View 1 (cartoon, helix red, strand yellow):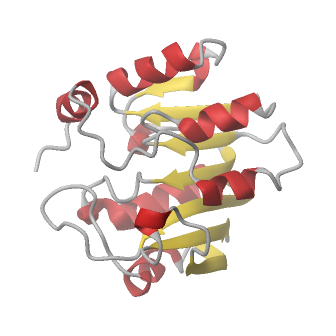
View 2: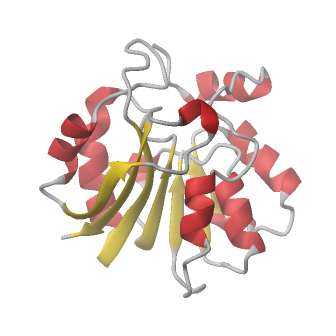
Amino acid sequence: MDLSENAWNSRYINNDIGWDLGKVSPPLKNYFDQLEDKKIKILIPGAGNAYEAEYLFNQGFRNVFVIDLSKTALDNFKKRVPDFPTSQLLHGNFFDINISFNLIIEQTFFCAINPNLRQQYSIKMHQILKTNGKLVGLLFNASLFSNRPPFGGSKKEYVSYFKPYFEMKTFENCYNSIKSRHGKELFIQLIKK
């Protein structure tokens, strides 16, 4: 399984991005609409076309950062949202980031990394979140693929990664998923311990 920068660029160039909704995910939009502090520092890792970042930016959140291995995906985003600060578009590997955030948004990044990195993902999230920082988003609660993204899993498996580092405020079946993902997503709201 090739999860290199070139492989991800190729997927965006060839429009092999079946996970891409073409818009902000409804559960995340609902969560964003409840946020009051527009100054919080937000990261969206593995952001791809970053519709969540676009939505937040258009709602007045100016401290949003996105990181992705694919320069093609970041370029697509910059063309769509030309006013978004280039300095907040990070081209690189999430595991190399050394900036702290109040909020990290999970939207099809966890399912795109090699499952062997899931424990490391949880540790890294804990490291780069500020005190009382939150990891909020969606995880697939379905088997999916074992040899290529999206990699699936289960709530029981995921809890084992997060429990040592986070208080689990919400870790439930998502009630407002898009139709094709209904019954297959968990909404998480985890607070750094």
